[in-house]
Image 1 (cartoon, helix red, strand yellow):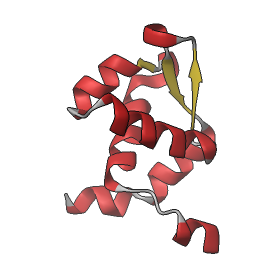
Image 2 (tube, rainbow, N blue to C red):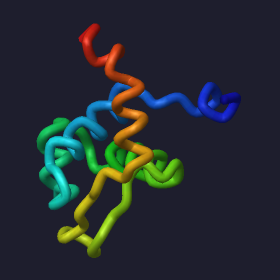
Image 3 (cartoon, one colour):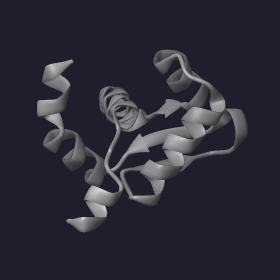
Length: 88
């Protein structure tokens, strides 16, 4: 529990998990994800690294063909964060 408090899932990360959830088993390319979030490559890269290290997401492919998928842990985190989404 302490690790979760030290590394909270941010609003941007919840938005990423939501988009990945909506994309289903096909996932979504990095460029499409960046466009939907209207964010920079650097900021998206930072958040994807954080989510990947926590086993919430995984990537397939390389470069511009990189696809991101939501893992089971990410689905659980998204469900547990639903109360935060309702506020927005």
